[in-house]
Amino acid sequence: MLLGRTANGLYWMNRYIERTENMARLIDAGLRIALTRSQDASEEWKSVLLSAGAASSFAGKHSDYTAENVADFLLRDMSNPSSAVAAMETARNNARMVRTALTRETWESINEAWMALKRMLASPIDQRELPGVLDAIKRETALIRGSFYGTMLRNEIFDFAQLGTYMERADNTARILDVKYYVLLPSVSWVGSSLDNYQWESILRSVAAHRSYRWVYEAEYKPTNIAEYLILNARMPRSLSFSYRFLAEHLKFLGEDYGARHPAQEIAERIYARLRGTEIKDIFETGLHEFLADFIRDNNRLGDQVAQDFGFY
Image 1 (cartoon, rainbow, N blue to C red):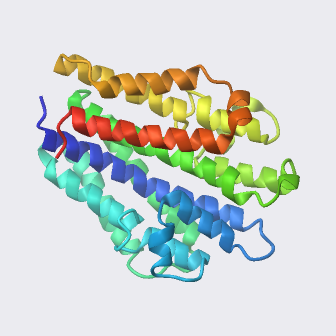
Image 2: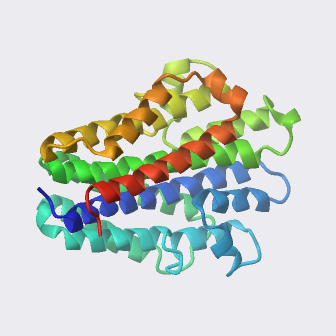
């Protein structure tokens, strides 16, 4: 049985690795959507900050919502604990704390990713170089994931790490969807327009779901289909349903290992059952923003319960 301190380190190590990748994906979404604007794109960049939960801290340092300022704050600024470079440093610190619980390959891939990000983000990024930097960040985190999946024993160490990954991923997908639907669309008259469809396509690309969406739907980009895919499709690796399928599964494994069914397991199973029993038309009828806001709140509550159940400190 793991000490709470070790479980906490594994959980947050993976949350911050996922957050590093998600920050790159969020900026990528903002970059793509801003390109559809013929005029000022500051509202799009403000919405990216809102999605990242960093709008107020950004406003304390910057007054202009430009691609350069927002990307710099979300990628390079060490005063922002969720910036890519700060998140990777926190992930590495947690990995170092639980070093004996990791395979050599996993530790080395985390350490190398941290060094690569420090080099890449040592100075401000030219906007023309930004897409290449974002791709490199996504590639580094993918290498960590590959090392982890390919070498780690499937025991409670693996389970705690996966809880961190899927908790963070579910939160991020919900936030990206919420930004698109609630903030970016300037007028209801734009719904169904070519611009609206391009923005939805950009969201799919930002969560690496563009091609797989076409495999499933073989159709044009419809908001209902895209929202269904990213919320309810249990085979899409970044969907809310996929994330909760694995959160429930890993909490079940931990319950078996620890000989007890914890409240966190019940919460995860309840959220997963709700996702499985919901149709997209019901979500749109009650309000997509309201649904996502409730989901983000419930996801945070689950994170708090996991920490309580397993004695994180």
